[in-house]
Length: 100
Image (cartoon, rainbow, N blue to C red; front, side, top):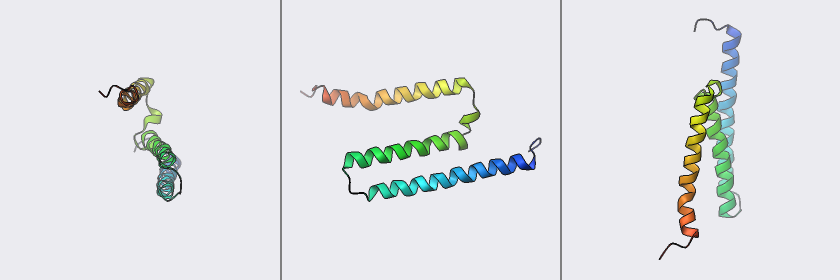
């Protein structure tokens, strides 16, 4: 760990601890959502929003994507775009009425 001062290490440790606590809190929120008396669609939407936030925290801090170059972000955005297309492609087939 050459070149890092004690204060820098303490600050990084504080950030990781706070992210860990936030992930724990969002996990508790996800469990709480499962106990809400709301429609399935709303509960699923809320749970997916919380999961997206948790995934973003993990990717940004534990996978160190905050300090990556723009090329990494471009690849990540392209991957996310393909994922969304592949996710909604079956939905378009079902809603399009191509089922025989």
